[in-house]
Image 1: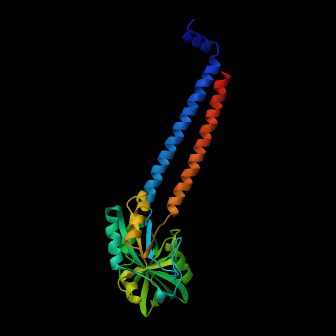
Image 2: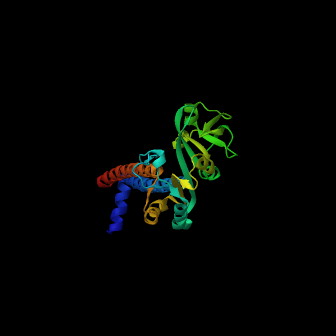
Image 3: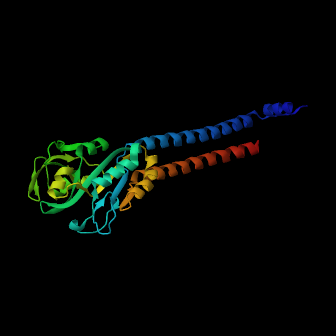
Length: 278
């Protein structure tokens, strides 16, 4: 009697157990493959979404005295007149260092002002570039600014300042008109008033000066690699990555991996018990 014959006769005598054994092993293998496929697909989808998230690198002047907050980053503490700024030369260095690894470089000038006797942050930006990068921007009311004296107001700022499309207000003696109200984004944009960069520079006599420069890398994987060369080229600045989305990705992936491993271990444990019993 050969080993093959013994195995074959054993299968015939214990058909029920063998069917259960095959099913349990098949289930364990299928679970492992399914979890691996799910994690791979999830990772690919999140990477694609993060690539379209928006600006992911922030370059600011190195200063202990600037008191501006943008997103989850604090930019220091100081009176506006003593604030440090980036220059056109700094922007050129940023573009040179990043080369073909970025999609966009956006200069911004942030200034605290008063509207309807309430303090608000006025952001001078390239509105066309901002709209192109932040493709999720939608107009709640009114229209997108078309002239130098028109502004776009975040929804929370509009509620706080009681502003509606068509309203006007003065900043340093210059009248600005609300062209539109930005739909809620869940970010710092909801609390800002956006105006053309050249207009804000002129209002505060800060020609060719910027509070910060935001950089959009072509892929989120390049963000970390871009920080060291930027710091080396611009030692007088702080270079930080905006990590909200990346942290979300890492947290979600860790939870998914733990869940997948737990399910796989349980299924294999059950399969092991079945094999042992057979």
